Image (tube, rainbow, N blue to C red; front, side):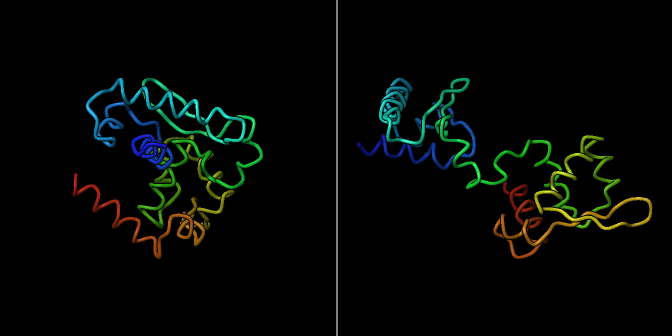
Length: 167
């Protein structure tokens, strides 16, 4: 495998979302978008072999690596929480940033669908709730901290604040 093809595969493997041809062109250090597409096709051919578990997909002009459909059910348990919706992730971010936060505030900000998001987050063990007056107080859990590699909930807020000020 040539160096540029290996770098393309590594970039797609690490990216949590599809990567544009422009971004890949920059990562690979090439000016030709056609060359990037050619490398993507070459990688697709290599991954199409029966003994390979991944495939490359083009989605709206962007590329991503995914598990072959016939293998997803067998390995999905190894990547828990990868199936969380964007709405649920946004609700989790709000809870983590404001930790602890009244559920009423979450609903005021995120809307009524957040009730379902909170239930999902409790089911997954990322959030707990305690009765407080007419509402609940939401807290992130040790499982949330472990999963995201944090020592404290305040560390999450610091990371967010630092990323906002750097932009």
